[in-house]
Amino acid sequence: MQRLGSAFQSMADNQGIGQARATLKELRGECLRISRGQRNLSALEARLLYSLREVLGHALVMLQAREVINHPGRHQLRQPSLSWHRDHGRAATNALRAMLIFGTTSIFWLATAWDNGAVAMLLGTLFSGIFASRDDPAPIIPMVLKGLLFAVPSVLLFGNVLLSQAQHFVPFILIFSVPLFIGLMGSVVPVLAGICLPFVVFNILLVMPDNGMTFDVAYTLNRSLAAGIGLIVTILGFRLIPVPGAGWDKRQLIQTTASDIRELAERPAQQVDSWFGGRMGDRLLRLARHEQSRQQEQQSRQGGVVVRSCRTGCPASRH
Image 1 (cartoon, rainbow, N blue to C red):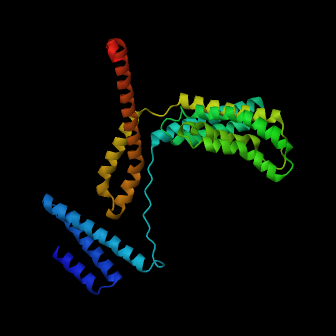
Image 2 (image 1 turned 180 degrees about the vertical axis):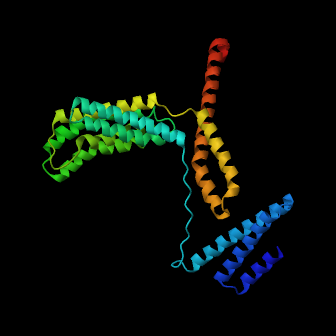
Image 3 (image 1 turned 30 degrees about the vertical axis):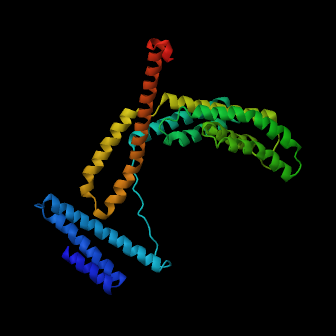
């Protein structure tokens, strides 16, 4: 600590940035060597050494920040990238589900030789990948199907009837933008976002504006039917191969976190923060979501018990 005080005093006097950085790094490395080399340190001494390393680390950051402020063109502060981690159980579940959906839609396409069967295969594979990152996407996909059902009459009106009357680019854009504007305005409401956003997507997908549009109602209905089949197969795939339950997921998260904590001592000190932080970020979010859903279930159960008890046992004057 005496050396640290004298080093800070000399840096405050006339030392340059390079010399100051080298001094701070040398002192921090010495604190690390002392804490690792001596096994008979008391708890207070170990805590003091750890605090000194933290002080020196913050001093290095402040020194770099001062240099950037004085010479912004020479330096760039870069945060080290977080490390990736792999969840093999969830990856296997997503892979099996995507394989089932893709295989079913591709067999359907080959067996029927339907021109629009590829649309069902495309949408099934696309949505199985989009919703793979969610904890329980099964309740969301029926909302996408509702967005498709609302988009079909809109496409027939705006895409087949009104767009066929547009002879120039400006009226074409005005007519085509009406359902998109309505859908995007509705997506601002959280309750309607799950329906309005698919409504916008399917309006674009079913109209497919280009220079060779035919405005054929039969083609639009065929494409809509293929999209609906792809979504139905996706729903069945998520129902048949669901995401592992919250209890199993929490146990896996806790086991992998404990394994990472045991591995911290084997990692280099300069890589510990980015390595452990990158692996823990997603896990903490998932644990928080599980805890939030558990609390909501408990509150709903308690509310149901109170309502049932009042209906059966409360006096009439309290209703």
